[in-house]
Length: 358
Image (cartoon, rainbow, N blue to C red; front, side, top):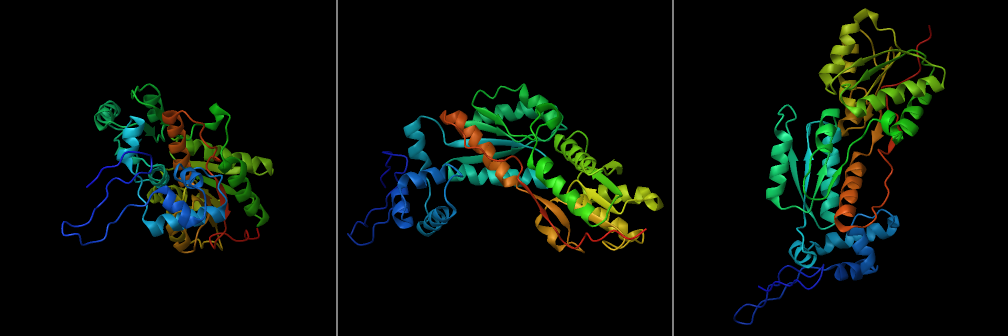
C-alpha cells in the first residue's frame, strides 16, 4: 500500500498486484479522471467540489454524473498534509428535531463533503448553561479547521458571539431583520406572494400562528406577514405564538373555539399548520371550504396532508451550503460566493380556496 501526498487530488492508497503477479491494479479516481469523463476542465471540477454555484446547470449535471460513475472520494489525508491543517469541520447546532435546523445541517454536511471536508455535528442542549463551554472544549479536542455555528435563538446567538473557539468560526443564523436591516426572501418574496394569492381568493380576515418569540426567524416571519397584509390594506385579526410543534398549532385554534373569526389561518411552519387543520376539523370547520390554512417550509409530508398544504417552500439546504462557504472563506482566506438568503417560493395546494361569501 502506497500513500501518495503529492497533490490535492492524489489517491489515498493504491492497491498493487498480488505477490504472485496476478490481479488487477485499482486506483481511486482523481479530479482529472472526473474532468475527462465529464468533458470539462479539472478547474471546473475543482470549483464544483468547493461548492461554487456559478456553474452552468448542464455542466454541473455532467460533473455530478462523472463523480458518481467514478465513485470519486476526495483525499483528505493528502490535502491535510499539503495545507498543514485538518480537513474536518465542526458544526454546532441545537433543536435538531426541528425541520429548519435539521435541513440546514444536511445542506452544510453535503457542502463540506463536496469541498473535501468532513463535518462533525455536535447537537447542544441549550437548557444546560455549561453546554457551550463544553462544546468549545470538545471542538479543541477534535482538531478541526473551523467551526460552523448554526444558531436559532437569541440566547444561543448571544452566547456564541462571546465564545472564542480558537479556530476560524462562522455563525450562520437568521438574525432579526429589524436589527440587521437585511431581509430574507421570505419577507421580500414569500409572504407578499402568499398574501397576494389569498387576497385574490377574496380573503379579508387573517389569523397568524407564529413560532416562539425567542426565535428571530419567528419574529421575522410575523413581521413579514404583517407587512404583506399592510401593503394590501388588510389587517390581521391577531397573532398566537406556538412552539413550532403540531400540538401548539392545535392548541392555538382549540383555545379560540367559537371565537375563531378568520377565513384563513397563516401558520409560521407546516407542523403547526397540521395541528391547525385537525383543530379546525374538530371544531366542525372544513378545510378549505370553511377555512383556508397555509404553512411555511414545505416539509416532505406537506404534500400528503389531508388536504395537501399550501405553503412557502424554504431552501434551508442553501442556507447550510452558504454557511459552509462562508466558513471555508475564512479558513482558506478566499472570497465566499454569494447565496440568496432563505430562498422562498409559493407552493399552492388544496388547503386553500375562495373565501366564503358573507
